[in-house]
Image (cartoon, rainbow, N blue to C red; front, side, top):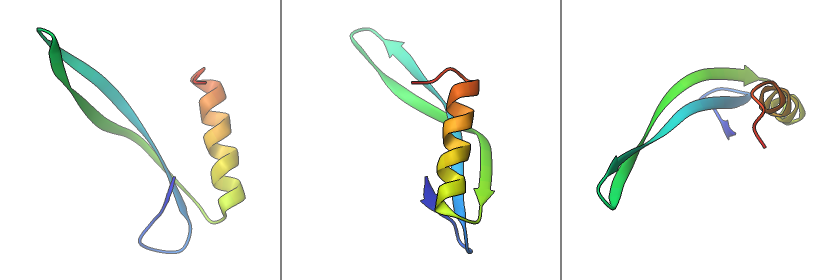
Length: 57
């Protein structure tokens, strides 16, 4: 989470992917969803709810 350019908190969900190449590779990410809240507690609540919905732990 991070503060945005104006008042509030921003929650961003990215799709992160490893592109394999031999023994190495590189990572890429694409932003999927951005949610803005006005308070820190709401930001954490939204992040927890999205994490549960996407089964991320």
